[in-house]
Length: 107
Image (cartoon, rainbow, N blue to C red; front, side):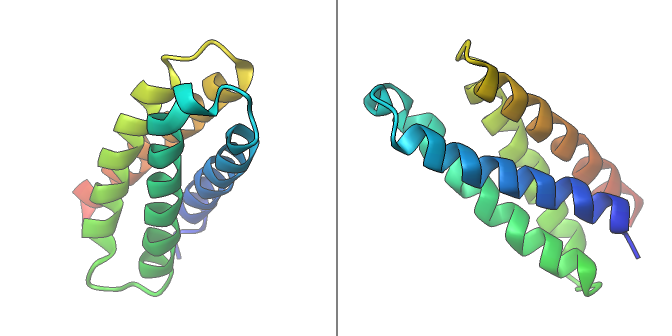
C-alpha cells in the first residue's frame, strides 16, 4: 500500500479545493482566474490519481506523472501571489509533485 503517497495527494486535492472556494468568493476573483482554473484541475487530477494508486491500476504510474506535471504548473501560478494561502498551496503542490514524480519513476 502507498499510504504516505495517498495522504500527500489527498492533502493536495483538499487544499486545492479549499483554495477554489476561498478565492471564488474573493473580490479579486478576476485577477485569479488562471490560478482558480489550475487549482480546480489539480484537485481533479489528484482525485483520480489517488484512486488509481490505491487500487494498483495499470494507470497509476501515468496518473502520478500527470499529477506531478499539473502540480508543478499550479505551484508556479500560486507563487505569483503574495498571500499566505497561495504560498501554503504552492508548498503543498510542490511536495505532491515531488512525491508523485518519485513514485512514477520507480514503477
